[in-house]
Image 1 (cartoon, helix red, strand yellow):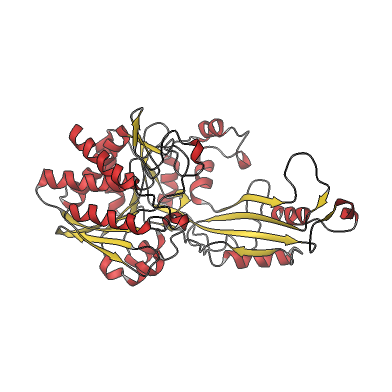
Image 2 (cartoon, rainbow, N blue to C red):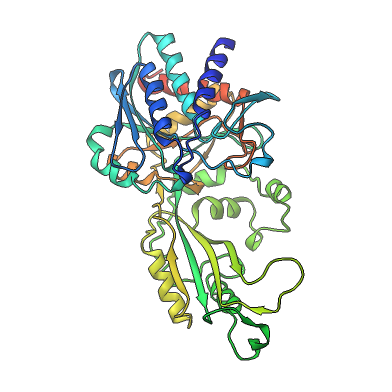
Length: 441
């Protein structure tokens, strides 16, 4: 096992050394080329598919009647703020039983775990099973070209099941898997009440955009967080009895999270099943930032001309991210906020959830439990978002996420890392899933 971990560490070091930051359009071709090289070394036939933003790395190979498709991405978040990193974000460091670098978990560490699981399978059973990889370079900026890619390449991507990009263990070290992701649409609201900033004395007769926009924002949800936009919940798919059963099995971490987050209470006093249902299977609106006027030291008696707020809606099946902005506009106009502009910031992602009764979900859960020696936690979908919908929609195959991270991995933050022990156990769980899927035992 020591040689296995050293090989994995060396491979991860090569991948994180490439600063493939999609938000900056940085080193993406280099990242794609390196991934193609790694997959070719595994014995697969890689191709770089152009015309969908940065190159999409597609690879296939192996033998057998069944096919498993892996989805991953080679792009990473910006490392900023650099001063908060303990080491160079693009040089893999090992300390305190962990590997540290930008992308160590999200998603280069996860990609390495999949490559290593396939190498272990090949070494143990003497052949490479039939697998395909789709590794894109735009996940961290919303995967704007992936829908078209999957739609156009559906025949090449066809598989019986899909292994999603990430997973790991929860705060108590229990392994978990998930069968879906929420959708998202990010927006900006803008209110302007004057051609330029005015002296604050005009506040007696001129409307303030901060007041205007804050009232508009307050109209979007109630005190418990329920969205007040008419029609917003119209397409929400009711939970099935099995989905409710799975939700009820999720351990209640609400109190631990309340203390960790430093919040007085959760919206509506949510606890236990209510907390899990809200977090994982209900949509919401969140305000990301509010920008207006003067925020420097001391005072400045000014009436700002404009106020802006950024917000996002997290969506659940079968809500449509293209419909939400229009519903929002109609709501604002009906409330008298016809002057508040709605700007869509990026192409939204549709929500997705696999059928929890599909045998592949049970197979993945069994693999985790056999590798970890304890019951795995199944989430109908995670609270976050990702481009899973195109795969479920076009390939008609289930997708399940499991991997090598933990809640303290600091994904998207300085000092991102994975614990070596989690990587080892997560990779062995992936190996066990490959055996169950391809060998039946």
